[in-house]
Length: 330
Ligand code: NCD
Image 1 (cartoon, rainbow, N blue to C red):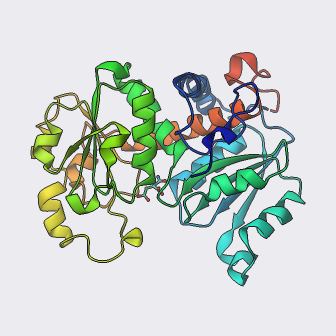
Image 2: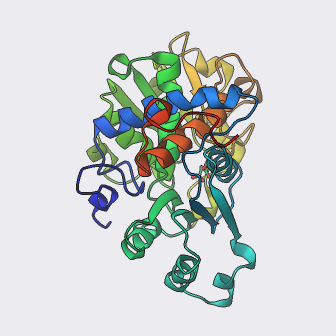
């Protein structure tokens, strides 16, 4: 993977947001704190601050997305950006234009920030290496590599409910092998000094040498859930699977599905998270998804503030206190 330090400028400030790997604890904490200052914007009658006024953001989604795309767009709107959302299904890329040509044509339209989701690992780094000085790239998910804003909204959610990472046991359950979300989460949890990060998956869905990322490995859900404070469930990413890695969905649920009964192995006040899209009855029982320990919809709401935070840090603003006063764009 290309050098992650391309993310920082000469003063160590965020220029691009491509991967959690390559960042440090101070930047992650600054994102969480900055996001905290933006949560109040959602409660105002006029949900806008002028931090990106006069800037143009292009959202390039080469893969399907519901939550990520809409919360990026809302975050941009609440920061008063001008927005261009490219429908890639109908764009020239399907006519054979290369990614670099697409980028250069968009740059000719004076875009200041690109948000990109692409099926190839490394595509966001590729973009960042080719944009003009002063233009920024945010990774909204690249292949099986990383999904850093998702990991940060997950960290925000965990901090919101659990306060301090240093005493926490966190379990990530499911298709770790194909999950860019899991990879970003593992890096973030470790940078924030989480006491223990467990990954729980069938052997066929566990990446080779995953322990080198600083996690403990379980192939038994019930053992892995014992006394954890946070349970993060992941979808089976069938579109990325080559060959038969799994028995039936029924069999998968029987062994790795999160049921009410199994959740009782976790700490009584454990929270249940899922980045979405979730498949009820496959990796998670419907009653757990809608149950009182689930914070899955809160994750979606926090996604807006966290994405506002990252974009505002990229333009040199750390939240509302140091930025232009709220309401300026009203
Ligand atoms: C994930 C993704 O696209 O990486 N979803 C998301 O962005 N919220 C996870 C998935 O597709 O399973």
